[in-house]
Image 1 (cartoon, rainbow, N blue to C red):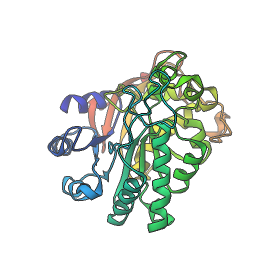
Image 2: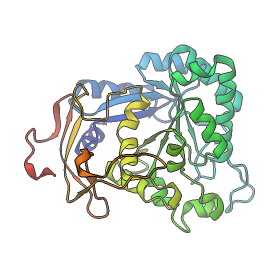
Image 3: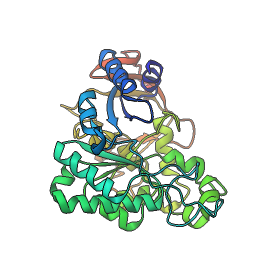
Length: 345
């Protein structure tokens, strides 16, 4: 745990969202990490506890001091293991459609109980059948507690790799944030990659719909799902701008916002992830080879590229990625030197 916190700080990461649960590490593991992060000058840690409310998840999350009751609360499995729940069989395993661990009623009940208890709920969801079940669960929960109350909790979806247009409309309308991992696409979305092997090229071509979600007004969070992919923020931004499906590519600025402000907004913090007067002093300094004010994509954002507008430049990510020189959390140095030279870029 200490090594992970140190690595994150060295990569310019000021906060981590830890997904705990009874089947993936246990309460003591999450408790120890939260205590360690609280005692050590290092990245902040927000804990999530992935257990159904009906099984005592809310009480356990409250006892642990977790931010949410969800995260790795599994609606289905993974594509790699053929356990992500699909509407149609796997292309390389014609008798398998994956596994749904939770029903629509399970999902709705958990959302209702978490909402009433004042907790953010969340689900691990990957396959299209699982995504549809989650969307249906959200609709049922809204019928019970009301749309306004459901939206207020900012419930969260992890991965959400196969959301349909209808699913996207539902979860955005009901206030969910969608937490996704661009390096999944970089690793598995390439021609003849794992997505194509498992799903065929047609389904593989509609995975990880970053730009679609943002263009529809959704709250997108970009991250690593470490240790599945490395803690490496600029690699995440670069992967989001180079989606294997051109229509799903994000601008660097939109991807940067989803990888910074997006994570803070997911925990209900509207001040984090920006450098401004009054914002928390969570900062990183980088050595950058080249910067540019990227041309806006009118689907997802609008800003001026005129230098006189004061729009800050972002690193050009086609070559070497920025090198972290120092990281501060609450104004305290947690990596590198307190005084960073002018060559930091």
